[in-house]
Amino acid sequence: MKKLKDIFYDYNDVIIAFAILVIAALLIIWRLDVILDYPDKILEKENPPVEAPLVDEDADKDSDKDDDKDSDEDANKDEDKDSDKEPALWVDGKLSKDVKITVSSSATTATEAIQGLVDAGLFDSYSDYQTVCTDMGLNHESVSAGTFTFKAGSTKKDIADAVNWS
Image (spheres, one colour):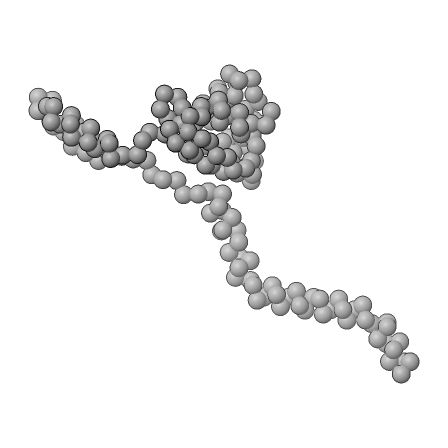
C-alpha cells in the first residue's frame, strides 16, 4: 500500500495537469465555431452600418425640364417631397437630433478614430475636426475612444471637446 501511495504522491501533479489539458482541449473543440466567429462580431460592433444619404431621385427629372415650364406647382411638389425626408443633421450650426457614435479604440491614428464622426456627418472631414480643435486650443491628435451620445443642440465645438482628452 505504501508503494501505491508513493507512486500517487510522485505523479499526482502530472496527472492533474494532464486532466486540465484534456478538459481545456475538449472545451475548445466543442466551442471552436463560436471562437472563430468572434472577430467578425467585434468588427460588426465597431463598424455599424452607415445609412445611405437621402437622394432626391426626382432632381434629375426636374433638371431635364425646360426652364420655361417651371411654375408654382412644381415648387409646391418639391416642398411636399422635402417634407417627407428626414430633417437635416445640422440646423444653424447645431445638431437637430441626438446622435450616438462609437469612436474606435482599435484605431492607430487620430484620423482613423475621427473617421466614424465624419461618416456620421458630425464633421465634414478630418481637417474640419482639426480646425475646430485648433480654434479651441485643443490637440487634435488626442482622441478618446468610447461611445458618445451628442444631444440635439450640440455644436461642433461641443463634439470636439467631448472626444478630445487634452
